[in-house]
Length: 617
Image (cartoon, rainbow, N blue to C red; front, side):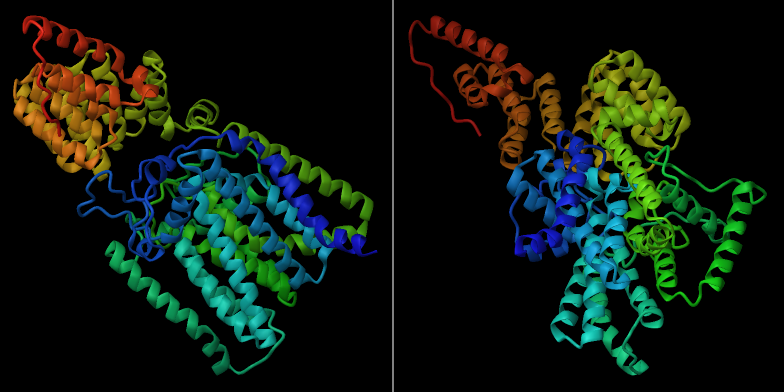
């Protein structure tokens, strides 16, 4: 009897774990891609142990790879970087570990949602069905399978926990629950700015669902700790990124307001009619006289009518209004730097509140015809799970599959440059060049496409053409890392055109701009050596090895410099210190043979005299 009772308590969690793991199984073999590379793979801060407090001063997306200067991303999410560092400590740079953490966090969020729905609806069975819909919904695959979207899971997890604890504290008078609510609210806003929208949700709860009626003064007093936390958050944010708000592009405010209902309709389509899902790049229509504006007007009228008719159903009203409140930051009324008006990952947090409507709908459906309702729900979950499995296998798996899907299947030419760069890495130069040409024609203001295209042109022996594209890129805005690559490629172009002074000038700027980039420093050393300036080459190597002591590229340059200076024994010693697993990639064996041959020849000339080994930096 006890075992049966325990089973009835735990079977929903076991089934959730089993189904979610099955649907997301392909994610375990996935890789780092897109923003994962700069914010995780190439971020030195993630790869070192720091005190938890130190992360409060970190700006999201700004790494030590390049000197940030006056550049700021404007995103302050210190808790995310802390979780990345913890992942690195556990897994190293293994994408499997980071993706596993995302999946575990998604499961934890589903458990909290399950409890929250049970509490609101007082129906465990329908709450479980609604949680399953959220857990397997294909629109959530972007947040779960893309490591860089972890912020959406964490803000939902901590916000739901904070609201649940706030209600418990308000209804039961528990001081411990109230304190825990404030703590989880702080964790939510440190995960993503959207957590700030939780305060309006508290207000909606008080107006619509609160079972305990107190005076307005007591209610306002209950918000005070959260307001203090918000003030502290903005103080820390300003100190870390020099701004209270995220970066944004100037938009037509009238247009953003007029088309906000259309954007909401777009998001609802992704939830209720999930097909053709991918990384959307949606922009405003060029004029107001179009079907999008009329669709928005229709939705506004329909929404107003439904709110009026359902105004006495407090649970539905709380769900629908909370969903719209949480969607507000993504509507571009408050401008953002996002390239699209619609994104699947932005729906993870708001959709958690829309599941309250699902609970009510499922309950009514089961009451009308239990057999048909169960069959329909199973069919919906089978579709959601199967579709999510496909997306996890193809779209969110690695950069190669992602770019091919976006450009070739969905005609999303915003990613043509990414596909071109991916093809270039695979040495498919002909197809890569075609994609680069599409990218620079379709996105003429995106400097990175010109810079990456110049890399291909340099590798295929066309430095003059590469220089022309680089000069076009030089007139466009670039992030610090992009500027570093631009300086480096300019140096490479002039180097291949045998303009040594110009190449040294640009390579030096690349090193100054990105002091931690071993490749840029190695290129500058090559330029010095080609110019016969071995002293400067040696000095640059000394400084480089102090900054990045494990760089194989720099160690190889050290060996080359010593060979040029006829210090063959030093060159051989350096090369032998490089891990043998990296010899093939960097051509160490050939260079070692050259150093040893030189050493034998020098020993032969000296008729058996011992060569003097000089210290190296």
